[in-house]
Image 1 (cartoon, one colour):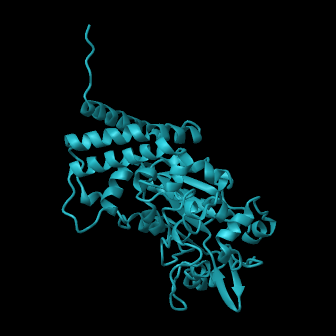
Image 2 (cartoon, rainbow, N blue to C red):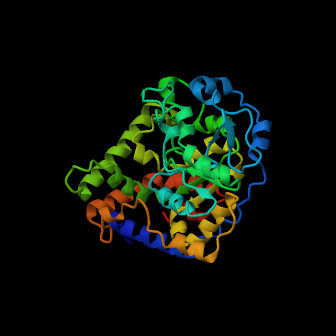
Length: 386
């Protein structure tokens, strides 16, 4: 008997049906309870007990301006990491949303700032940790941000005044490339500087008290959103063929790197960047090799959208913020979604080019999703149904 062969389009349609069925079966908030732990430590207690990593000297040489600017002691009267410096009250962020870009980080940060004890840093994503070089390359007038660590501290001078008046208040930031830049950046490109230390290690040495939120979205739709977000605005409207060509080019570029180098080298190359960013499982070990698991709160973007109340509530508890009153939560939910790209494209009907592109991306990301699911106790939500 002859066996019927399914076309790529049919396979994609079948996978989308499976994904839809899986999405219906997965409780969008069931994974939160096991992750959420209220902070039971003070900043100064963690700071005074901190022990340097074996490669601290390498990290210090790569970022000399950091450790010279850090205080000897933090205030015990404030929840946020703050200190007095020459009669000026200075602060660093209590938490960071590490990424991943195009996964809803801006939207979550915007809603968190509505909490009465959460102070907006006024610059949601300064991208200091994942972009700023040392030595500083840009010279600016005094008081202007120049990418140095003292200038990064200065970003929080305005929030510091509110925190000084409210000891329970905290501030944070959301530079959404930090999670995926863990191998490639440490005050410049790690390949250029020829260093083996990671961004996770640098943050551990500089801010060992920090708490982190990471959002993962279906890497296929994340890639699609990023394609439109980073595409040159002056170009004509994108076609599905252009998108398909980009997918093929990016996958070929990654595979070409692997053909001549080991995977770590290619991750440090961090290119093609938007394809690499969706390989979430590749970056997770570098963070968990240094940081305790209980300092992280991992979200799936699709679950956050499906069940915003338990996700926002879990975040508040994870950050040690008081419970929201019903009216406060209502105001947060009524906020307009931030930084979305869905208005730039319509995937309600898929052309043959788009179906082929999605199939290529699903095949590419499948093993990385499987590794992520395994890392999170074989939770099927991280497979995204394909």
